Length: 128
Image (tube, rainbow, N blue to C red; front, side, top):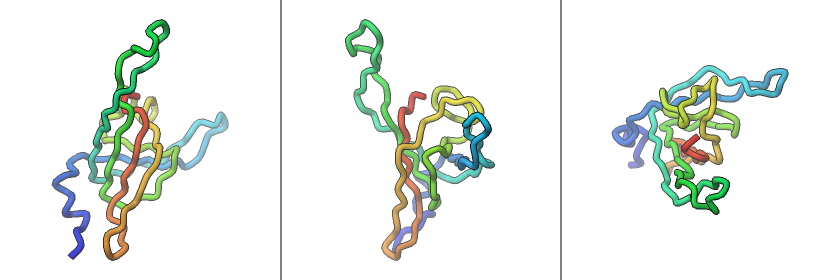
């Protein structure tokens, strides 16, 4: 018997918000659709990436370079969509006031019967 999305529910205790890009205004700025929420989990990938600061020769502070969000739903995303943990956007922004982590890629994983159960989203700089 294949595991279902409900089998992952105890690992995915966060509420993930997805806002798809619906259009752009006359200035080319994105206009996002209504927020949709899903059960999921955000996981950070820690890598040593020194931020460049002038005069430090690459010895600036280390930052987290990426994070992943697992969403317990099969979504079709776009690179300009917003995906974030509800109430939290890295850098302290809100959907109307970025910074928010950019979507770098996403995958949908089918089970043994071919049904998509969840979406894995790779986000850029988790520091905003």
